Image 1 (cartoon, rainbow, N blue to C red):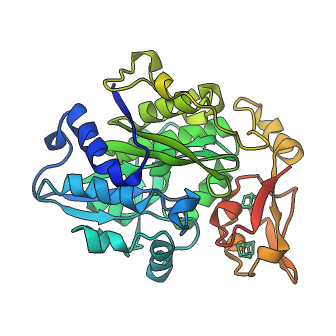
Image 2 (tube, rainbow, N blue to C red; image 1 turned 45 degrees about the horizontal axis):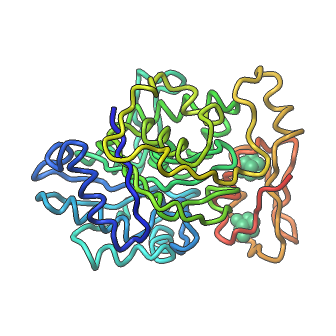
Length: 359
Ligand code: SF4
Ligand code: SF4
């Protein structure tokens, strides 16, 4: 398996680097065919200005689409952000992320179809069916465009976790509730990936995120673009670049990939090495016995804490929470610490950044 990595310091220069990534990994004809409908799946965790590095940068998405336009294809750009989905909410997320100009500058259209389907995956190790965005099933192929970020629960979020975004709105949080132990959660993420089979992952590592990602961390210039046909290989290379040991990332631990066999046809991860700041509290050790998992979470893992002055009482967090741990109070949401499983879905989905991850 190959991972293409190259330097890119400015979003204005992404077209050429992405063009070289396609040609190095087999040529554009290897990835798409005339007449196909292709879903471009960036990270749209929630609407957020590009400078905050939460969502895949619009210029990066546009450069990928312009490369795809070399073929006669119908391109749809879509994701399933945290929380309940509606066309109106999607429009707000697109607007806030400066994605509306994608339709002005390319032939692609933004997705407003929020229908879901049950996708069966009998080969799944821990989960054999998923509630997915229907669009993911309707298209001929998927191009995965993750953002290189840290993650308060899984330490790192990249190509594998980005495909989890195709699980429908609130079901994402519900699956957190089903897979409390991180190793099981990692296996479930790998099952989702096995059921999706995107054709290529191209990672926006130009402006990444460190600290308490995936939405509350700090933007950090990493000046790189990575690409691979295999999302796991792409994530492994990204972790090597930023100094995150694979033993901390559940999807890498639970994968059966031989990481030593990965080839780097352009640059090696070591030519970019730069340590980034981890999430503050770290995550649950991946291998703890079942009976200890909840207790450990309650005692040791960081908690989402409310910054009252930022809260607008929209109650998105209450709706997202998979354990009904949030109740409404006059001052804003109150979290029951003994019910909370520290999945951080509430903090990821809060449109006002009013929930921060703290010890
Ligand atoms: S914490 Fe965030 S999501 Fe929850 S009610 Fe306040 S603003 Fe809304
Ligand atoms: S309150 Fe706890 S369980 Fe509920 S969404 Fe937030 S972190 Fe997850």
